Amino acid sequence: MCTIDDLRNAVINGITKSDAEEFMRECDFKVLARAANELTRKITGDTATVVNNVVINYSNICVAQCPICAFYRPKGHPEAYVRTPEEIAKGVLEAKARFGVTELHINGGFNPDLGIEYFEEVFRSVKRVAPDVVIKGPTAAEVDFYARVWRMSTKEVLERFKDAGLDALSGGGAEILNEEVRRVITPYKFNAETWLRIQEEAHKVGLMSNATMLYGHIEKPSHIVEHVFAIKEVQEKTHGILMFIPIKFVPWNTRLFKEGIVKGPAPAEYDIKVVAISRLILGDSIRRIALTGFRLVRGWHQHY
Image (cartoon, rainbow, N blue to C red; front, side):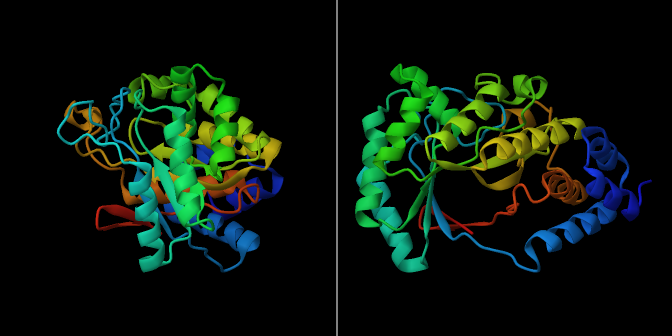
């Protein structure tokens, strides 16, 4: 069983992958939380910040159909949709007026019927009605998919998105940056190396990004550690990551749950361990580790 002093010494001396894996396995969650809280207070003090945004999905049509996903619908399904640029802009304007949102978070599925002009018009429409609202999205996974459909380089897609008004990439599509895990949970998406490359590419063309990690499915502690260290390495190269967002996997209505591969949500103690070890690994390289909350507001998700 590890002690608080073990954790403090590891942080001082530079926590290694083997250290972090051992701490995930052996440490009581309360001890990990205490060490992470001490480090957080050194980095940010007793301060928490809030991003008040609206989440609008442009389309739920997706050809990837990942086993982790309950969101997608195939083309022609009665629940499938594509929102128009005008509809999205109207939703942003309404959310800004009613709730004071300062950010649009926009993502969707892999819809091969959408052209790059659609996305450019979405971003321009939002900036026309709410020029001070920050636009975050799409994900690196969407950038990779659409670049292949449109026969463009990912760099060209990123540059055109930026020129149309995109401010930052959202961090999705990372899931777990380990190929053994990805073959099960996202078998038809790109690989971990490509996600990391597109993050760096986005930073180089002037787009900031978030970075996420989807946990609580089939991953092991070693995969959590591998993922967070990979994020840290990107940040040390580019300094373009705004925040790190650990996202708890909700299995209901997914194929992983229906096939019995995942039995239910991860326990709360595991949630605490994941967030705590992330802080201990990242240190002050990424100051913000985000915890998210949602409420449904007349068909849109308000994210805070």
